[in-house]
Length: 423
Image (cartoon, rainbow, N blue to C red; front, side, top):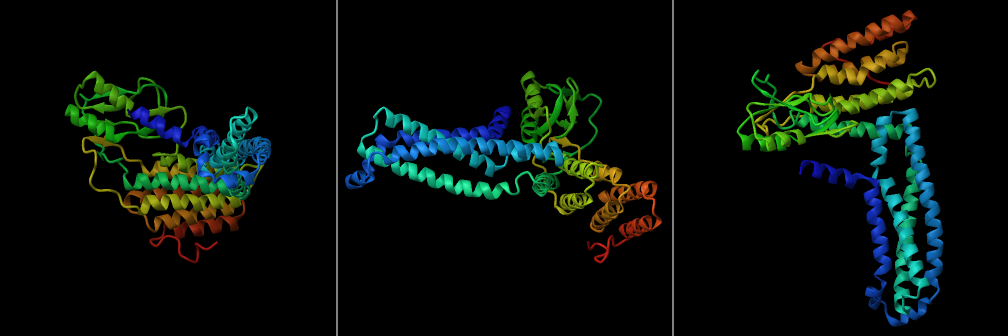
């Protein structure tokens, strides 16, 4: 059941599902003329004429084929651009975009409607009243296509551009981080080391864990009267026969397999339930912007601002106190791992760029100012690490002095001041 629900959810997000639904709707509209033609007054049927629907359908069919091809080419080009200037991890967000899916699905559905209508007219299926209904349906489809086309043209001005990629990755990261911050243990209990007698549950294959169904684990634990320790969280790289969980006592073979199925394993990580992937993706964008061939510190500064928003959620969101799965123990993410995902690559590749190193200290200082004890040490350690990298790579003493000044402010009791945080 867990795998079935996951498959259905992923299918609903896929472009093929939406396109299929629109195509079926177009075919049904064209074939419903004999059933609904009685709604058209007889005088109106005669006024429409017999050839108007056929002419419009011919134009619609030829134009929709061209527009669909153009849209597909544009989408593939945007995916390629996103890979080159951003990160390949952003492709899954572009593919899941609703606007592009609706546009392509509308064009395919209009094409299917026009083809079915042309065939039916050619073999003489429709009466005069049915032709009139078909004409009204054609006008409705054309209106839908025009509205979609106008939105699509406006959307193409930003689709797949650098700002669009940063915004998409930032929003996906913020959503995953909000879910994590509100339930850092996925509804389970705090992690305690399982006893030596605990029974390991191996994964069903190698890959990445993309979903942990804690509610399903709680159901199994209740039915078997046991406790479960989640050894591997979402985003973890696992190998075949490596344990993903531990059981406090032996359970039935059916329950053992159900525990395995509660861990969805795939070849690639997804942003859902994986805040580390979002931070890593943002870091990849800034790292690529710092490559010698691009050398775009402005993009890095934008990425650092987006990263700050994501981490600000982790520091300020209120976690749910009452666990919904008290029999399941889950590891909490280490703040050091999250911060390394977010900043280490940028600190490494931007160590010789004074603007980037100053910005890192500013962002860390703003986070230190609101951090609690669990985050404060990790943030300050990262600020020190970033300064050391700058000291090794910055050649001009004036540049290094500015970075050191910003570092001192970052580590002060008040963090970065408002004046220092400007710019």
